[in-house]
Length: 351
Image (tube, rainbow, N blue to C red; front, side, top):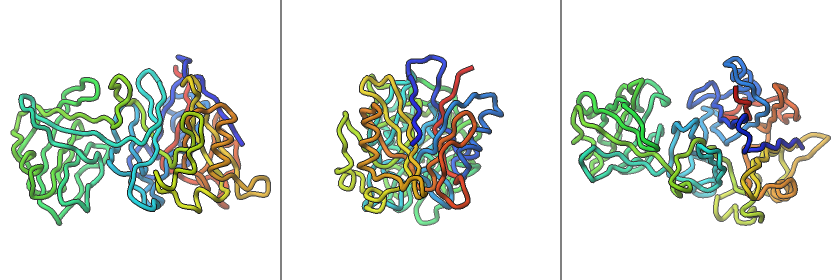
């Protein structure tokens, strides 16, 4: 087992989420993300693999907020492995680096200045396919254009960014509203896309060129004092709540499957202390002659012993990787060695 303790009260230490290749999709080794950050001038003290991801695309399964920017927002976790559609546990930090853990969902809405009616946003940088209607926000993180959708009526409004007030973004509407999907996404803005023949389509169609459009992106439940999240990173499932193991509830609450929860695997975990001052990052080897790994029950017990009061499971198995001062210190279980993953959590010394 490999444990990193982080004093969140230290002003010279920062926590950062890294995305593979700095893109919404893609896979990259944790050690490679650390090296890339070092080339950009960052001193990365420690890093671990983080959220579960699509093996084909590398896209993370949960909400994703990096340095206060929403890269991905969802109502339901984007995972093919749940026993039913639900929301997974996530770790969040506010700007003051206070840590939180909950099953956050996206609370998004758009409205024009001077109008009280709001249009709900159900996804950020994710096509809400499979639903009769819905509204999505696509930023430049998604790519050059919005996704093609030929199954539903579409209205897409291009927005150019003008500023930010807390967790509310402000835009100016530019150009005509397109009646087709696949619109170009402004590099300094976004596209608000409504699907279906209902009210949401009409609301976006009614947005006029030159209008100021406000977009609120936050979470439910809210962070204390309505703070905007500076970081959100997901996992599956939560294993400690207020000092007690909640692994026994994971199948009911988060839809965990037996082969993940009850069998021994390499594991990566994240937690924080009762007073929220200390972060605990753990990697456990497995599938080797030295270590067979641990179950989720055992992982919860270990995290509680080292001092965590709240904790969650990150992606494990062949993904489990811990990097200290640029070197991989654990024994990745894949036969080819370290696995390329979707994201990593890094402990960085500030300049």
